[in-house]
Amino acid sequence: MKKFAEFIEILLISFVMFLFIPEIFGWIFRGTFNITSQDLKNAAFLGLAVPVFLYFSRKIRNDVAFILYIIFVVLILFEAVHLIGW
Image (cartoon, rainbow, N blue to C red; front, top):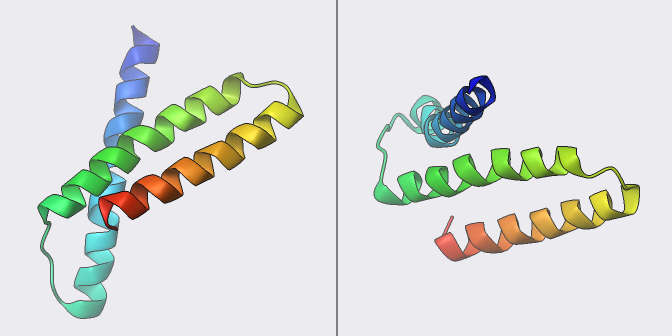
């Protein structure tokens, strides 16, 4: 149960970081602070995907498989963020 709670905590922290950090920088440099539904979609996708990818990357012990996995993850994130419209 403790590991599940830690995983949920990491998901929430990741979601909040992907949601608020770009908006805080926008607020500092442009003076505007507004969160759109597009920002929520991006934060939901990246906030859930990154911790899950990190969890599975810890399970891989083979170096070649790990490198292929990282390339696969980068391609997926690049394509998904591009399709979302970020």
